[in-house]
Image (cartoon, rainbow, N blue to C red):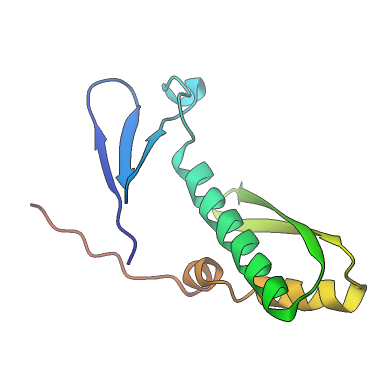
Length: 128
């Protein structure tokens, strides 16, 4: 399954991430003391949901042989006081009708990352 390792030194708050054979950099913006050399943690979270949504809908359209030419998933993490939620807007391009788009929106509610976020999950932390 998925695995990532993050390491941070003394440079506020640049974090090196290795996942699979990919290397990423995360950071915070200047307002939080970082240098904005990479996406912040919540940007990475919304990126994961947006990518999973787009990939799943592309797979679904291919399986159904629907003429979808582009799928856009616009994902926003919203915090209002002590409450938080995610807004996701789908734009589906190509020769698909309203009913097919509605079906794809229904599928978006059951992508793997969507289900993980909606269901919550246990996080087990230990010291090495």
